Image (cartoon, rainbow, N blue to C red; front, side, top):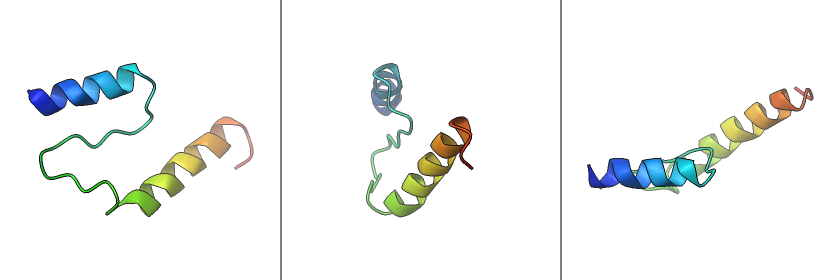
Length: 48
């Protein structure tokens, strides 16, 4: 429940991606996450 609260709070503040678990290593998938977010943003802007 604690980490679900962190996730909900982050999304409520406008974060586009949240990994909220006791053992999350944010840097482990950072490159993949960045590419996914960048692709989604470019698609939204019509530049894909």
